[in-house]
Image (cartoon, rainbow, N blue to C red; front, side, top):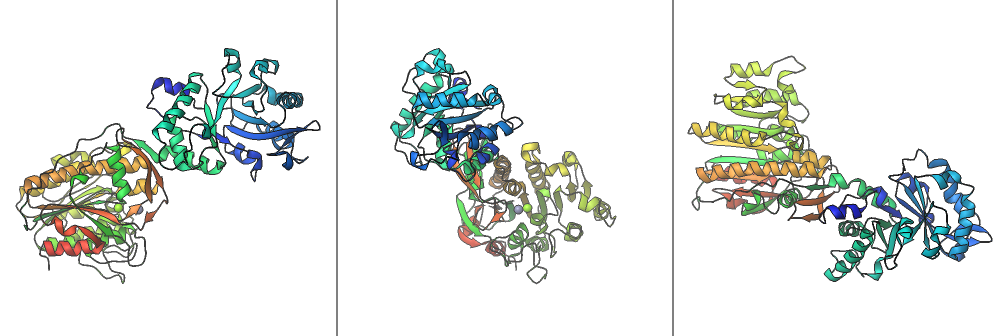
Amino acid sequence: MIYRALLFLISVNVFAQPTSSNIFAHNDYEKKEPFTKAFGLHVGYIEADIFLKDGALLVAHTAAEISKTKTLENLYLQPLQKQLSGSGYSESSPLALMIDLKTAGKETLGALVQLMASYPDLANSKSLRITISGNMPDASTWSDYPNYIFFDGRPGNSYTAAQLQRINLVSASFRDYTQWNGKGELTSADRKQLLAVIQKVHAWGKPIRFWAIPDFTNAWIKLNKLGVDILNTDEVEQLHAFLAKWSSSTYQNKTPHATYQPIGQWKEGQRPKNLIIMIGDGAGLAQFYSGYTANRGKLNVFQIPMVGFSITNSSDSYITDSAAGATAIAAGTKTKNRFIGVDSTGKRLPLLTYKLKKKKYQTAIISNGDITDATPASFYAFQPERIMSEEIALDFIQSDVDLLMGGGLKSFQQRKDGKKLFDVLRQKGYQTTSNFGTIDTLTSMKFVVLDDSAVIAKKKGRGDFLIRSLNKSLDVFTKSNSPFFIMLESAQIDWGGHNNDLEYVVTEVLDFDQTIAEALKFADQNKETLILITADHETGGLSLIDGDIQTGYVHGSFSTNDHTGIMVPVFAYGPGAEVFKGIHQNTELYHLLMELFLIK
Ligand code: MG
Ligand code: ZN
């Protein structure tokens, strides 16, 4: 159980990640499955209201609802007797059975103590804290009751040290401090009042709960931030599910990167010579903005003033996959999901890469995913099914693309047909390697580097694969005088979205953004390079439900583990950038490039 009292001593800025131990199942007995549900979810506090009637302890909300069959024993003590041991509750993570006395305190509690004599295992268990609330007898009499009886303190009372030892938690009505409805933020006056009482209770070394709180996501987040330890809820399952996702939905970036200030000195109306397309797979606006938040309010990509939006649907679906999404950009035609470089009938499309090759462009394809995956493949291959990675690799041999850097060695070197494509590539004049670490030693104008270390997640230690691959390509291309085209994919923003893993998303966005800085620096020196940064689609239905730009903290909420239909941003930098402003079909990006680069 997390006691903010301890954390409070460490730092006021730390707000802990709540768990099911912090859940208070309010009026549990009124639920469809009393006890079982909350107990199964391992909540910290389960509440029952009890009445003493004709010597029996009955569970009900009001006297009128009393039923003889609903006894404290039937509903709680008997199931607890059977299930407590082995349930996972322990001395360090106990269950508080909150018993709210609705009839006279002394008599009702007396009857409870008598009843507990039949449940010595429960009375002696360190995993259970029977905690009395409601019509509590006066604190001066608490020492008359057995030690297994705890009490629910009130912040307005004062307690002796001995009495404090009998207090399990402290509760108060939220409405004594604020009328906040749970939306947005508390007023600063209400916030101050709440903080005062929270700090008072924490100074006692006790956790605090408020009843009558707004009971939904935003309120839970804000109360947790204030330092409220125990969340009183009627929505046990929703709160439990929300807290279970907390750690995978939140991220704080401890190492923000400095951003580059682009100069933007190209001539008005000038045509671009070189092209760099950078695709953040699955990178919607929320993904970029989560990166912006985590990087303390700055991103290289947000320094680019020319912004548009791309509509990403495929020919057969409101929601595209990466195959149709990338083919739209690479070939200017909406095709079916799963189709690579071919139209809806399976016919080969005129890929941008080939069009530029014809104009004597040097070309590079870079991805920190498998190089035969849908996004990079759509820039050099023609297949009616994205999983045909061996056929896609064979298409690469025919493509005459100069530089290839990524993961996915298997489709080239460990093929079912036994072919070793590196041998074929070497005959065609390529240098080949499966060791990315040797990239700086490659001297050829054509090479293929396929190293599965490229596919490691950034958060698991990928290193600077994207930056080094981009810079190596730029080195090679600036040595010759011919124009060039680079397609660079940040593939794993999408994977973080599919995994509903915010840290994964953000760390990939930040890696992509640092790579973008390198492209911007090059374009500023070169002055003839157009950079187009976009996404094939959004992944995860990410929205941002909390964040702090000062501390680089962000809390996301994913609505799906798949792609969504929302438009994605387009950032354009360099000569010709202005044509990309506004809202375009994804296919229009290709046609605008055709016009800019005078391609027939
Ligand atoms: Mg991809
Ligand atoms: Zn995807």
